[in-house]
Image (cartoon, rainbow, N blue to C red):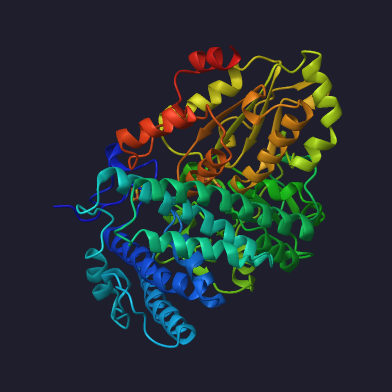
Length: 546
Ligand code: SF4
Ligand code: SF3
């Protein structure tokens, strides 16, 4: 018997789905609670969407959509009690959304209310909520498999977008239109009159709204910290006490940097925090000294070698080893049972743990480059365009997306290694750790490897592509540009939807295709977008260079 069912990430067991325990470490009780959260959010969305159509909007409901969905993203929250708390709040927000609608409507709704949007009792124990969650599994035998496939793509895309919306909101860049789309799309998933093309269209709209969300997030970062500039980052260690910050949230890092200033503690970034070093408003802190480690999947081994305190502000957390568990902290929506969670912005427990831990020794190593955002790249536009015209740059490659544990991911390392010297690689998100310590050289002073930023900086990569297309007076699909994505979790899904919503063709995706994509849906993507799975490095280089 299946204890759970989840197939939202690239690690889905046997390429089908996790049924006993998540390959990520998600336990069946947490899986049931997260199913309950997603189901509850759909019911909340039914009412929030109806209220919005009549002009009534509620910020608490909007923010709860972001937080609820983000809680269920892979490698975010593994703690049953906190997931149960999010589920309880979902029920309360559903009730609030219904009241909001009835107020603005001047009475109860006259149409049919789907079973999924009815009130449900939330003041129950965690165990009782787990039992309730089991009644609302992801699998639904009453829905056509192809419709289900596109519907899940939409839900996972919105999970990714919710993460970006949550960060943008922290920077004061919340946009009610983002939540408005999410309510509409989540409500559509419980509307039995909706068919395949409705969900295809919603997926495209999701991609487009995501670009606006990522733009808001970028502008939030750039307004607060100034636009990123190319910055070499040390990957060795400095003498002294140390704190490592993992995740995507720059506001949390900023606050930690303020609170550690003058305390003799060096702050290091991990995985998706690397681009923080490129922002003038963050690199001005002299004790933000470097970047530590490889991809997120290496943390179990690598954190054991890190002497100080470690804090996660978003995904990807994994089961901690005993050797560092007491120096590990979570913040925001990330939780792991038994790991200390920081509420709010008081990081004194993390600082104290770093001060009580051993000091690190001086071990200087090489530097890697980050901060090559679109403003920095486009400031070199004339040089880049000339290099293309002179034949010194033959082709651009965007090699971006998530890292992960599968052995097939060395495709991305070998791709970066084997691409000819007259090609330029733009990278973003954590998949870059497969090759960002290589020395790939430069073309007339333009580095061959340009780190555009975090996964949310897909927006910035799009700006570069659009500017090049304008300069060459062609469409993005006609540029000497190939996009090769690596996916792992739901943020990569929404980044792909954004590219597809722009009509970008010929994207290659790996290391394997999502388990939730049925053969018919894959055919649709191949026929309409020329989407292809990655092949061998040699074949793909040959095919893209023509
Ligand atoms: Fe499995 Fe991925 Fe779901 Fe975790 S998130 S349970 S690894 S499919
Ligand atoms: Fe990585 Fe987890 Fe997706 Fe922001 S940190 S990209 S996997």
